[in-house]
Amino acid sequence: MFCVGRLPICAVRRIRITANISLPQRTALRTTRAFGNSAKSLSDFVGSVNPHSRHLALCTGREAEWPAQAVAYHPIVSELALQLRMHSAETKLTLIDAPNESTEPDAFDVVVFPDKLKLRSVSVEKIPELIAFLNGKKMKPASAGGLPSPRVIPGERWFLVCIHGAKDARCGEKGQALRDALFAEIATRQMSARVYGTSHIGGHKWAGNVIVLPDGDYYGNLSTEDARALIDKVGAGEVWWDKWRGRMGLDEEQMRELYAKNSGTSSAETPATAASIETIKVSYKTQYNGSREVVAPVGKSLMEVAKSYDISGIEGTCGGFMECASCHVVIDDESFWKRLPPVRDQEEDMLEYAVGRQDRSRLSCQIKASLDLDGIELFVPGGLQLTSGRAEELSEKWNN
Image 1 (cartoon, rainbow, N blue to C red):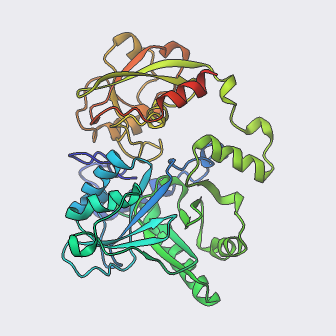
Image 2 (cartoon, helix red, strand yellow):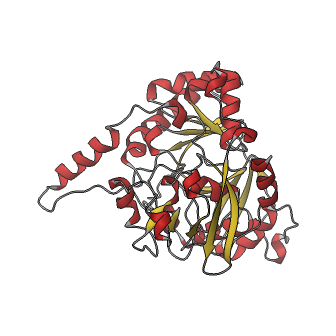
């Protein structure tokens, strides 16, 4: 999901280089670092999908060049991301290289999953109509300035492969080759399916990454050699659990439980039940709506806690992998500041892109709820407002 606001606060992974390194050497250094640490733990892999219940894919065509920050591609992207954040928070938005059939200037086709519907000619001015559709409200007819009637998209399955090379070298190198391999395999089998490239979907380190829609299953650590096996599994209506990262419509705990149930993982590796988890109180404060106290289970990152309570201004776009600055917070209280783990180099790099950075700025994805942080208050510089969300439901969940 995109970072949104007046200024985009996501940033491409930053690499330290010296002024006297040549361009070819810089390219080699970037590639080496991008592919240098491929071994990842299963505990990080499963459940590494940001929870969302819907996916919007804005069609740009194959010829489009996406910038590192996708919200900078076109004004409609930043405005749509902002409106989704305010009115349809559990919706993921990406760019895809599917054809844009709109004939109107500065308008785009938008595909909605799991609905499998395409809304044509969406412009900045017509975003309210799209939001109305997503929220189940009646849209104006096209004759009255509304959008054309949605139409069902072709293809039994859509495979969206992250190819966002401007965001991260791994996605550009592995993703584009994987997309081509999947396309060739589907064409050979004459399957009713579509394969397109997509912008950043989170988890660069799991490249190649694929979303299979409308099922909403995320797969990672895929190579071109895996294309046939993935098609075999999906075609048979099965899940490839060895490569499965998570699923649209589930939260992290549900993803891990589903994986444990279907993969033979021991019960000791499944998440603890809510009843066994200790909790602390955490307050999130914005300059607009004051402070709000929530319940945080010990062990959860304060970014995950904020997202579960729909705290505006904390996006966690990269999934907590320190590939953006969209969970930036400030800790004013010196006593709590001293209890935090030290800032690592990678976090320091990302904080350079944080809007409103201060001396005591941190990425909340790097702060785990612990008993010694009970009562901590975090200032959210990017917060537009604090929404009630599911506060009562979550408080009851963690307190029972």
